Structure formats: C-alpha cells, structure tokens
Image (cartoon, rainbow, N blue to C red; front, side, top):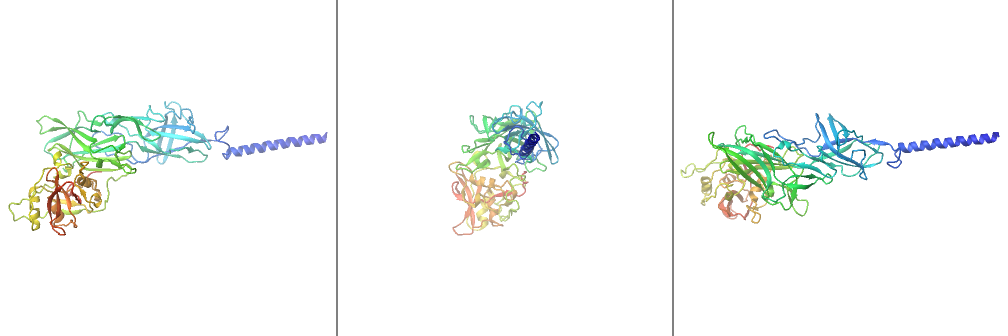
Length: 559
C-alpha cells in the first residue's frame, strides 16, 4: 500500500512539473513573439506615428486673399491637424472598429513631440490602434480630413472664385507597402506629399500713365472641350493621381474690390500676388498656347473718366511649363510638387501682357531659380562715338524704362516694338553702328551674361514648324547670377557687346530686333575671319549664338 501511494505521489508531482514547464514554455513563446500572428492571446503592439511633409512650400503675404497652402516640412505647432486615415489588416479588414472608414486622426505638435488621437469619422467614438505582434497592416492617409473621402478617392473642388475656399491637399506618399508590426518598434514615419502644382502670378503695370486695376485672374484652357486645366476631381490615394476630373478654369475674382497695380521699377513698388492650386497634368499632347493666363482689368485715364473693362490673355508656351524627359516622349504641363512663378507685366500702353521672368523649382527648395548664383554678370555701358555728328542722336531710354523686358513675342503680335530698317556703312566702328543707335531706342547701362544661352549652341531665332521663339526663350530660361529676367538684346544694344567691352569672342549673335515678319537682325562679322562686326538682317531660321542681357537698374525679380 505504501509503495502504491509513493508511486502515485511521484506520478502526480511529475504531471505537475510537466504542466508548469509547459506553461512556462507557452508564456516564453508569447513573450518572444514566436506564436503565429493573430493567435488567441497574442501580444498587442500599440501603433505610433510621426508625420512630416516631403515638400517645403512657403507663401508670401500679399493681396489678394490667398488659398490655404500647408507650409514647411513639419506640421506646425499651435494648432491641431486633422488627417483622414484608413488602417486595415493585410486582407483589407479594419484593424479596429472604424479604422477603415475615413477615420479622424488628430495630430498635436509640441516641440519635438507629436501626440495622436483617433476617432471614427463622426468624431464621437475613440479608436485604439493596436496590431498583433508580427502582423502586417496597410496604412492610407491624406490631409486635411474631408467627410466624403473613401479609401480610394478624396474629392476636391477648386471651382470657387474665392481663393480662401481653396485648400491644399496632401496624400500619404510613404509608406506605400505593407507595414510589419513588431514589439518594441518605434514610430511609423508617415511622409505626406502635395497633390497640386502651386502657381504664383505676380502682376505689375509697365507705366504710370493711367490707373490699372485687376478685377480677376484665371488659369484656363485655350479652347472649349480641352481637358488640360480642371477644377474638380478626385485624388486616388493609392496612386497619388487625379481621376474623374472636370474641365474648368481656376479663377480668382476680386468682385467689387479690384487691386490697383503698381508700376514696375517705381520706388516701393510691390507686385499683386495671385496664388493658385493647380491639379497636376503632364502630357505629350500639350502644345504651345494650350494653357492661358487671363487677366481682367479696369482702366481709367483719370479721376473723371469712366473705367473700362478689358480682358487680356497670355498664352503659355511649352518652355514655360514643367517638363518630364524621363520617358521616350517629353511631357509638358503642371507637375505636382512644383512651384511655378510667373512675373507678368501689363503693358498699359500697348494693352498686352508680357512675361518679364519665370522660374520653376520643386516646392521643397527655398531659393528658386538661383542657378549660378555666385557668377557676376559683365557690366556694359554706352560710350558715345558720335558726339561730333549732329545728325546722330543716340536714342537712350530712361534708366527705369524696362520695356524690353516685356517684349517676349513678335511685332506681328504687338509684343516686340516695331520693325526696323537699320542702315549700315562699312568702315570704322562708328559707321557700322550709327544707324542702329540712331534708329532704335536702347538701354544705356546693361549687364551681360558670361555664359551663352541654349547651352552654348547656335539656334534659329524662330522654329519654323512650331513657331517657338527659340532665341528669346533661351534667355528666359537662363538663370546666371540668380537672375530670372534675362532677355535678348536689341540690335542697338549689340553695339555695347562689341565696344568698349568686347564680348564677341569670335562668335555671331542674334538680336531681338525684327526687320520683317520673316527676318531679324544679328550682329555678324564684316568678313570671314575678320574681327569687325556689324548689324545685318537674316531669315529667322538662320542659326546664331545667343548672348543675353538685362537692364542693370532693373530690380532683381522677387522670389
């Protein structure tokens, strides 16, 4: 009996020991995350996020009212940021009740600390986000939260003519793949990117002869039925692309409060700044003049004269749009995450719009269009060789007359002055340029670029097939010295490239001066191999080098 009792006791103890050991092994397995994810009793890992912005936009205060553009690379302190989030398991089911249905996620920033809270889309029920150790989840998100968003489409509407109704739209661009959740992991970094292209239009008037007020500005399509510029649509959260868009202009209408334009170059002059949020579009089908900037003005010759409404259109060429050469075909348009700035001067004498400069950069860049910022342009000054010739009166412009910075078109478009018939004579320098300085006005103090435009290549003045003004656009694209307002010199100004500072370097250059609809002046060698140059007209399809200049007294375009 004793023996039996001893055997039973040992057996009981052995079973107990095996049970305890088994429990210990089970607990250890749970602690080390070795059980299958999602198993009953698996440890939960609370999700933590840290949010940042991949772009770095900044806005300048000004008139008129501006849209809401999210600034900086970090979400700012002092306010709560409300995101729309969709957090699911790998199979698409909600990680928690309400987490897959446009959840409201609120970020509060204090110093370097980010605090997140989550509720369902009504804002009434709190949500705790936790996943099983080793589990894969999917995260989609956008900013700011809107009621009608789904996991595949976030609607936007920019059809209002009041920019205060426009709001920047960001989407979660990283991570885009499955996130594996493990115990002890840090915050999941959420990187948000801008959906739209940010376009700034700065407006000034050319002269102070009359009062010009801007009533409305819009960016639109050149013709009906064109779908390039849209003002409504949906953002696909998975791809970051615009879908189901509606063609229509983007318009800022000032209504009964038009803005009077300052005169370019006047002391204290400040441009009227119009900021647009443009849904991105990049296509090989976008041609010159497909996209237009339209300005509605009210003009009056004096206090006692009625105001007259005028509508002026500035067509954008491919050169003044974003380009994508990564594929076999070049794409043109407005690219998301870019900031395009157009400095436009309204010629209130000729009643047209001209581009005095433009620049483009990724939104994250703080210095736009700097180019070779440390390069100092060459200073050019007019030296009068004709003081003893009564019949010669060089037509020097006033130092603050920047008219040539507004001439980016052709005479036929009323956007390049007048056709000129420049007389030339052989012989000394004064003979060769007498007609040019006597017949065409010029700016007497200039700056010339050290480097040649168009990459140092010889190009035609005008492309025969597309009509693009290649020589002028080569200067518009030049960024030497941090300037964005280089232009092609007039034939009278080419004299200063030759004397007293000689920048010819054995090359021949285009001028901006037209002789006719098909011919333009260039400064060329008198004879092959010679060192003397003179003005001569050529077909616009001839090829010469491009040396750009700018008016030295002209203020540097604002960033």
